[in-house]
Length: 346
Image (cartoon, rainbow, N blue to C red; front, side, top):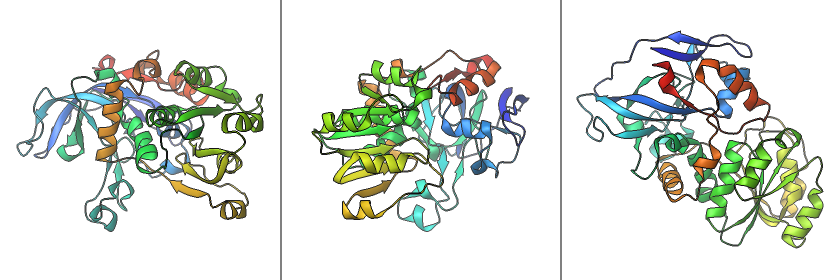
């Protein structure tokens, strides 16, 4: 079989490689992959950002996927051939302090599918039973490829934010996680606005509007005027920074109300700002990373009910046979959530 792998420690370096079909171990299921998404971390691998220098190349990437069980190991009891599944791609060690207290998403020794071992940009993957999550009948298989990124948004909003019905919320960044976060926040009853920058104007901000959100183009719109009008001059109750850009946190501080909350989801790197205004305004600064079982459950339910609009969100224009086009378009802001049909690699 063929898989799309990162093969060089430089920008690009994505090639189709030959792989043997895996044989599942006693506690594993063999999953035939149907659809797989492209996310910000996949783009980071494509750009070969410093966070991915630990990878042993070549590695088949991809961790947002849906598939069907085609074989099970002798110890597997929760899944059977034919079951539709997604994977929780961060695998905790089970032994460290964080895993012991139920915080496996921040495990000290975690390994990540598509980074530390081959991922789902190939037709078959062998997955431990305890990393699989069943897909309910009401969720289409293509839509199920969105469950993993949606679970990141559900964790940020439902577990880690103070969003309540009637709250006024700003989501900074109309990328995949930003627009999913906006949909989850709206499902909790919040009034949500989404902001972006120049490169978002052609595709991502219009997608936000198609999903029903008021949007702000920062280079051309007056952020202060929007804040004044939308919040009666008080400021947003909660601001989610999904930008992954150094400007995101300082901008959030200017936008949030006194006594409000900022939730950091994007991984910004270094930023410089004054922190005294946060203290004097008693602003709650909360981080949110990855997801766990309950977050996947919430994601599946929101997709099933249509509160997260998978049909509008997914972009299926691209092919794994010409992946550079998809990655370059994603990096340039010309798409938001490419989802590939993996059957073309069989």
